[in-house]
Image (cartoon, rainbow, N blue to C red):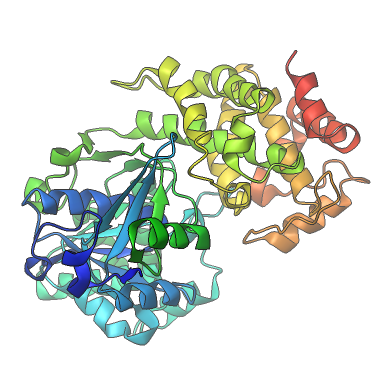
Length: 494
């Protein structure tokens, strides 16, 4: 019989549990977007510090804003904000551990004032974010703040009303702290966006400027937004993961997290209050650096764009898991060729990293059969991913006469995937914030080959670049007439 996970049962579990007194932990971080990645990464690092007898004043208060966040709130509330992290090694070994660093979780629609009050509390020194790429409301072409969202417009034009968005909460809390002299907190983005801190700074300040120019000026002067690079493959938790934890380790956990062994966090050491304004993260392996950009470019253009190079082609060919595609030599060679010949020439020198080892290691990580990362997860929200991860590589190489053939094939594979049916005639569930738009464009591309590429909000003027457009059309035609595998065979000789 499995034991329900909660504070009362911790001492009876057969897996490692927090070795510190959780009642002594005080909230120092408010985090928006408590999902799998946050729990496998930032919360894990804080738990490690606490187990070492440090950082008990840096407990996490999670915040859910979206309707879908209620499930996480209920799951965490039912087990005293505890959850199990299961590291899955390639040899089949499982390494479970209960994480206790999340000590509060607020579902904003239930108590909007409680969220603002917690953020305005002097004990809160960091507000961190994993709100996904689309959560920053960056216009994909102009790069400016996009205020067209209904909830964003509510928060902009009804500043006296309870906020609905991360932007509304952050500015409301900073306004209160400015007024009462508490001073700023640090806003720390942990999302997969190049210059994530800079993006958060630009978008939050732009929001504040539309609402209160004086507050915007104070944010510009006083609030730090450090950039970071975060890395750990964390697939969606499945019912099989819950059942395995229950049967093998005797833990009944409503929402455990599974992940790969590898983890990395590179963070600019720029916080309100200096070193006293952050936990001693370097004590648990976080790399505190003056400049994150070389590391984030490496990760976004090799790992993240590498996932895109795998997922559409693999799905079209009939695969459903990342490890299956990465174990296929033809697909793995294509991804490595993209990394070597197209992505690497766009990178800056990365201190302390051997790229010749890093790139094949990525393929090994993708091929971990225990993680069982789904291609559907990697193919989701492509309109937020391709423009940020892959198209900068394309534009860099077009400007300098570099290679673009493999990236063009990846874009064409996305267009083919967006048609909503794979090569076996099976339906594809396309998940994207602009799903209807991309699928409508994909439906026209048999008659208009550049219909998909002509979406200027996603691709800018790439459809007008003769070299890219010609390669893209060739790739799309090959995917339609020959399929993904035969197209990759043809691309090997390029």
